[in-house]
Every structure is written in structure tokens, then in C-alpha cells.
Image (tube, rainbow, N blue to C red; front, top):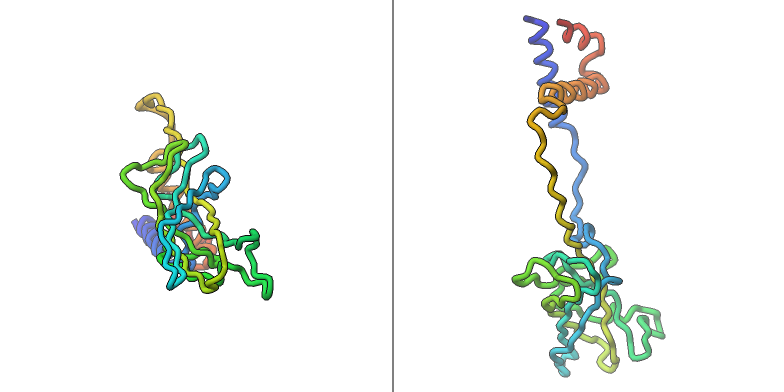
Length: 214
């Protein structure tokens, strides 16, 4: 009876140790970190919708057209303002090599990439997917030009996820298929926890061997 009690105590100690194990600090990840670069499989449609000459502010509708044969998940789509080019196609100023994008005030963005580039989420709308050759709803992008005299063109990259193909139906498994029983799985879990206790010096191999003997 005492041996069973010892085994139970060691098991409980192992579980408590695993629950109290220090967790790695979490960091705030960008939504784009888990997405795929779809720029080569899509086209960005940019439409100038308004211009405020007094504030040198421009408002664009930015949509994504799916050029691939894959179905894209609508609410996973983002556009990243990758660069802004001048009338000569240059993305940097001649005098100090600053990016022209850095000379813009970007309004209404949903966040920034780790490189500091603004991104905007494409509205999902009613349809859950963007089908091949389909055009998404537009995101509204507002840029305020600090250099009033410059003529510029924004350029975007597209990030999102493809819709996985449906899994083929599996034949119904027989009720008596071989597999790992719950008892075996539980025993394996306890063994792993005990090895952790031994590694931490909470219990020795000799103590565990004696406690687990029938």
C-alpha cells in the first residue's frame, strides 16, 4: 500500500513540476508573420479616389485580384505599402538617400511590419474566399505628401493564406483497430514526467525503481 502511495505522490509531483515549468516569454507578433507572400500570385489594383490639395493628401482604394488557380481566404489578405516611387521610378531621394516612403504620412493603417512598413487589411466582405481571377473589396489608404511638389506612385505587396483543399474522405475505421490504449498513453506521460523529476534531482532513479516495484 505504501509503495502505491509513493508512486502516486511522485506522479502528482511530476505533474505539478511540469505545470510550474517556466514558460518562454511571449512577444507581440505581427499578423503577417503567419502569412504567405502572395505578391507574385496576385495583382494590386490601385484607384485614386480623392485628393486634398490644401493638405497634399491622397486617398486610394486598394484591391487584390487573385491571378492564381488557388482559392485565397478573404479575411487573411493584407497589403503592405512596400515603397513609394517618384516620377522617375526612384524610391529614394537624390540628396540624402532617404526613402520617399519615409517622407509620407500614412493614415488609417492597421499596423506596421518589423521593417516599419505600413500594412492594411483587405475587407473580407460576405464571401469567405477570393476565387481565382476574383477581385477583393478595397482597403482605404490615405497618404499625406510632406513634399508638396513631388509626384509619386505607391507600390504594395500582398500577404495572405490559400484555402487548403478539402481532405479526401477516409473509409470508416473498424471498431477494433490496433492503436495505443489510454492506459499506455497515460503510462508514457508519467514516465516522461518521472524522467524530468530525475533530471531536476527531485527523485533518484533508485527511489523511483523501488517505488514502482509491484
